Length: 368
Ligand code: GDP
View 1 (cartoon, rainbow, N blue to C red):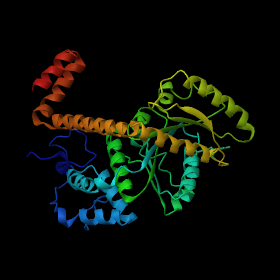
View 2: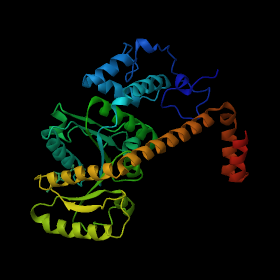
View 3: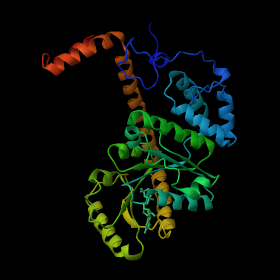
View 4: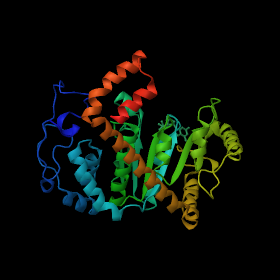
């Protein structure tokens, strides 16, 4: 019996699961007009909203429907993917107007305190703010550092702001896809500043950079970790470095750190053509420096929009995303093939035992 993996296996089944796999998902019939069913709870069999009502709800500013639309794009089930794509197609004309800002920094640097302070300022200035997170660690631990509800309390309570923790399952590529699509839904809803937060570990900064217009690195002085704690590669991605906690006894050390960063930045290629990355002081706690750095970000937008770099980056990001999705799809389709599944464990054993050279083994499977 052939069929898509989603219809036969639960989402958590291993990719190599065969017919012996006891637990199956019974494929339901999906009627697009009847709507989205049972998105989260397998027990909930009641009907969800239709694509039409999601589109209308998002246009009308209904947060419940926005959240349901996000749950839909976060679903891994093939049948949800079809309606999610239709939904995204429908809302596409309303997307793209927000300023997308990536925020990274090691745990404890003050990301959430700063995002809350900046977010509250932006709300007061009349912006609508959405905060999304990409937290790669949540895939491993099942818990999310960035999903902690007690963070950004004021912002979370304000109806003009929207906070969504990291989607918690799948590869970084999968999480990135979900976050991009969530970002589009938020833009269609009318959020005009999207803050996309990630912890400073591994590949996630590159991923966040690849979907944002402006990339902000938050660091702290002291503990002698000015430059050691943060990889040079991350500094190279940044459009601005904020040395946070520049207050009280820490002010002097923060000034020294700022000068150190500026010296290093002088040797690096700018992350954005035509824009000089600079380090600045800020205190998320006292609010000192927040209006000033926001002004700089607005200035960045003016400069890059007028020299065409802003639009060019977005076009390139879309192309990169397209190819990443294509590669992911090709890979998935390849491994789903019955002939590949049949031979792969045998070839794997031969590679493990050294009976077959790796290149020859790969060639063999590819030719199949
Ligand atoms: P995150 O892990 O990067 O999100 O960091 P948090 O925002 O949770 O902040 C970590 C700790 O640093 C908390 O105890 C904050 O109160 C503190 N903190 C954040 N910003 C500042 C600041 O500007 N000055 C001082 N003194 N402490 C701060």
